[in-house]
Length: 156
Image (cartoon, rainbow, N blue to C red; front, side, top):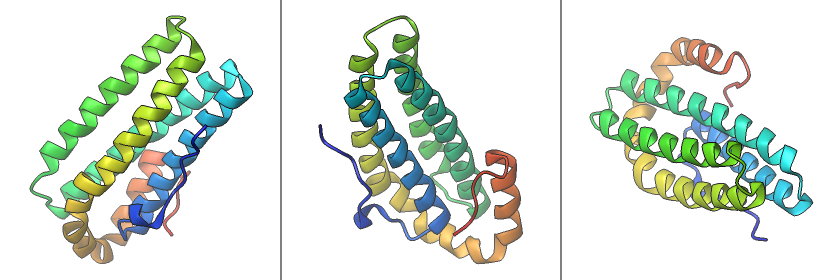
């Protein structure tokens, strides 16, 4: 089975966002491990943690874009909502008793393709604007991380 690993071409140059994206890649790898081990309970567990983390990441990223005054923020948020809907449908399929390993494969493949495309074609667009505001907003960033991730993510 293909293992999805972080590559440097996915770095945006915003350490906190890159760290969050790497964590999502780790979750995708965990889904792959659950499939290999044929561990249905792990599929359910990873899926729930992945959903929660991704929602938190989207919230932080969107607040950061808003704080930076990114003009395409609403369009970016709409892409996040569409992806959340897709993940929710896959999660529903899992809860309704569909083959957990088939669903896990769809989740893994969907996430891999979406994350790469999203980073390289959507996220990259906000980088210049966000970088300008980062140095001036360290206290806001620390507060947002604590609020959204309950202290579970630190800045690099």
